[in-house]
Image (cartoon, rainbow, N blue to C red; front, side, top):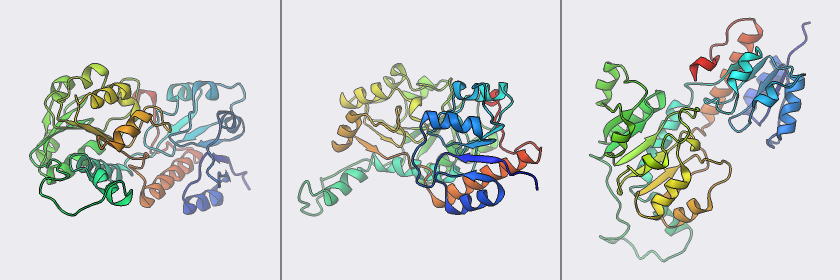
Length: 332
């Protein structure tokens, strides 16, 4: 029989996916889910035919360009590929794939939840009952007042699959849909969503009530919401980010919220994950921000579908065909 390829998986995956991987490949799994060190990832690249990393595993040029790197494929368990030096892999003849589309609805659901959470003070209100910091005397007509979202302007930064899914949900809540993208969406989609296109991100940011970041992290989008652009945002506005922390200048966002120059924020991602700026934690305790631990796509269904895509990509590649989710440098 033909020898099964060695597939190294960096983190614990759903049981059904790991079982299937063991059936198909010589799979080396990470059953206790302890994150691999850079040295362990480098060692895996020297021994494996296929590496299955996650978004928190950095597969940089120094790993890929090791003289004895054996990798033929990097099958990323994730939609983004900002953790992989795709150009270096391509130059070395290593195929890179990802798992697009399966997380669109889950991430859009969480984005909509956060759009609701900040103006309506949901986390702040829940903590009064669960943390016991103060006695709840019952309903009051002037207590814990937030803001309605119906009729407000939502500015979506990045109108790809997730941005469009967010827009569909937001429109059902009565929000006015605005967006900035590298290019306008198709007229049929814009009409369906009732979406207004802004070629200038600066002009859009200055006029929105809620801003939702839904673009990928690439060299071009690093600090897309820079210190200068964050200062354009209205004092009453909120910022929601379920994309990547690096898209926002986090330090400046904190300063503006502390100074009362931005109304608040809801964040599921952070610039220096897994570290969370202590100032953000203090703002959360003060009810100014809502913080979640990067769980926007965390559904059982989503994780299983991601794993199935990884397996399909590997099987297709090993059968000498083009994987359906191949990523090229020109696509980034």
